[in-house]
Amino acid sequence: MSLLCEIPNPSRRAVLTTGGALFAWAYMPRFARAADNRDPRLIVIVLRGALDGLSAVGPVGDPDYAGLHGDIALSLAGPHAALPLDGFFALNPAMPVFARLYRNNQAAVVHAAATAYRERSHFDGQDVLESGFAGPGHVTTGWLNRALESLPAGDRVATLGGLAVGPSTPLVIRGPAPVLGWAPLSLPMPGDGLASRVLDLYQHRDPVLAVALQNGLDADRMAVDDKMGKTMKPKGGLDSAAGMRQAAQGAARLIAADDGPRVAALAFDGWDTHVNEGGATGRLATLLGGLDGVFEEFEKGLGERWKDTAIVTITEFGRTAQVNGTVGTDHGTGTVVLLAGGAIKGGRVIADWPGLKPAQLYEQRDLAPTSDVRAVLKGLLADQFGLSAAVLGDKVFPESAAVKPMRGLVA
Image (tube, rainbow, N blue to C red; front, side, top):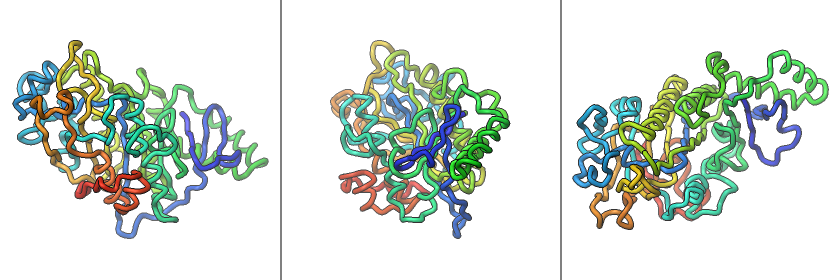
């Protein structure tokens, strides 16, 4: 296992390197729960590679959908029938957990959504998505870290910092606000004997660093249960269905803690589906099944904290409405934002549907965006943590005052 910590101007006394792992959580105090018994959390999941929103949540009621999306279009009939959400949209059958949450008013979809980016470069699109700026080239800080930094001094959410899950810190949560990193890796943790010897060494030579090490070890033990500790890194890596579940399991244990982070970011690669994408079955369905497992692990692992939790799943752009010659889709524009959690006002698909006729497509090839991803994210940050529209439009998402927060996403 590995713990990484990203904090302002780290010094030797702020982080400890041992056995390929960095540990630091000593600056995090313990807090009682809020007086109103509400303890909000926000989890951001980034799907890198561009999710095909038309195969994740299909507009089965649009007469042009099946013809454009061909063999990978969802259908309410057949052996792999899509899961109906309302009279117009249906969910990929690989996502029964999300469908259940939707029926229980704990999941929602924002369809035909996109960032301000209108080109088709994965790298630039991901920079825009995670940095929160209107254009590429801003890779120093991410909007989620700036949201933490924008909270009032002494605010519990800001003081507890964020959580980055994975072998590297996603751009969305990089920045000066404190971030704890955790990832299940292939190398085992040092045994208790080695850990105790290292602790004893630093207790004599550097008590502050010893406290940091102890807190880091405690955090990692909290993230990993006995079963996870035995399986370690799943076959296929963290971007496999099993890996996604394992990442969510560890993250949930940390986020559920009274003194754990209240915001978290996870990033999964592999969503670039140019060839043999599949629809209700196949490669994309396997990935969506892994994502569905992430929702399930957070629901189970967060326990009573689930009721105050909002999860948002975002991707850099969508994919073409028309299937290509290799039974896949190419880089597009409009896609879906998936929302889940006990705090979500769910049971609905939020969409100003643009239509799929040639004249209605963006550049005659893509689902036209009618919702701004930043509006969704602003709405969640405002409802969960009380950030004002002015702060969101100036600091968190610079120069975006014209993009108003989407209200009513949180119950």
